[in-house]
Every structure is written in C-alpha cells, then in structure tokens.
Image (cartoon, rainbow, N blue to C red; front, side, top):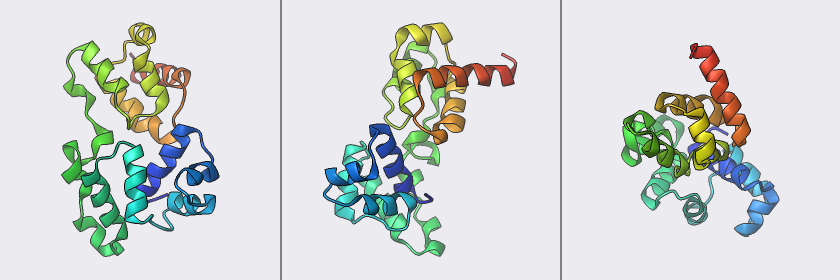
Length: 172
C-alpha cells in the first residue's frame, strides 16, 4: 500500500465499511481489482480514478496529478510533487496545520468538516458536548491525526482514549 492512490482507496473503503467486492461493485469492477489498487500493484485507469476521487472529495487537479505521479517510473516520481502543488504546506490537504486556528470553535468546525481525517476524530469534533469535555488543543489534533489516523478510522471513544494517552505522555 505504498502509492498515494492506493492509500486513499483503502482508507475510503474502510471509512465506508465496505468489502473490496462491495466497493468494486459500485464502480463495476471486481474485488480482486480493488485489492490490486489498494496494494499499489495496479493504478486504476484515469477515468475510474476520477470517479473514485470525486466520491472521496478530491478535486480533479489533485486527482490527475496523483495519477500522473503513480504512473511515472520510480526514478521520476520525485519530480512530480503533486502534494506541494495541490495542498497546503507541501503535504497535501490531509495534513492541514490545525495550529492556525486560534479560536476553539473554529478549530472544532475545521476538524468536523475535514473529510481527510478519520471518522472517529471527526465524530469527536461533531459532538459539541464531547469536544467541550475534552477540549483538545490544535497541537493535540495534529498529533492525533499524525499518530493515530494511519492506524484506521477509529471510533469516538478510540480518539478520546488516544487524547488521554497523548496527554499522559506529554505530562499535561
């Protein structure tokens, strides 16, 4: 699961709680084809990738740049830096720096509306009562995204537990 497209297809499928066969049937492809896409063995056609990307709320420019990069021979991939062209800070839109939000409510809304974040972290922000109880700071949200998001979508409870763990390690 090394390519950017592979990672996004995998995360999208997991977020929807679908099997590879179920996701494939939505796009008239087989489950084994989805498996190959998720592992990075094969890059979907541009047509198929654009349909998938649209469902993942990835803009067309970013999707095309990702597709071009994934199709390039390995030595040339570094020349096609879609992440800096398409997103903030050179890391892509999923790596928004939440420390730019000074007001707690602005931070909560930014997290709640970010489609790149795991479902459990978005759920934490969407529950005003839970957010108010835990009061995560912007640096803590960045840590939750960077450390725990790669592990999966998680639940609201998972991210509350993760926040407590982060605070314990940081001595907060």
